[in-house]
Length: 94
Image 1 (spheres, rainbow, N blue to C red):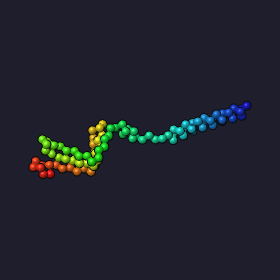
Image 2: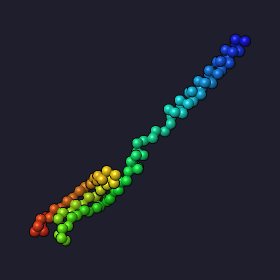
Image 3: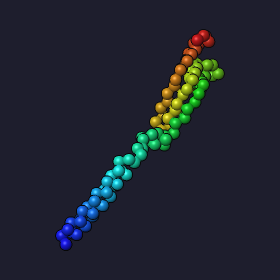
Image 4: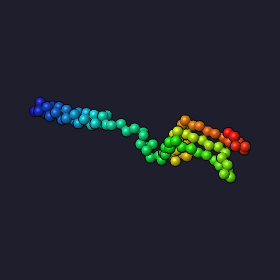
């Protein structure tokens, strides 16, 4: 009778180990979620070939051109790439 009990205990132990191994394997092989999900919730606008300028009384003070401009609405920060700027004097020269 002890051989039957030992055999049953061995089978139960093997099944438990298989279940624990299966659970560990499922947990260890799950897909990794990257942190980019947080950036998707940010409101980011991208502009191409954008020009900014300031005029006072119809007179151009400065003008700035950027090939690419990215604006993060949450932080109110923007970045510009390939920027060209012009500042104008009172006499109209730049």
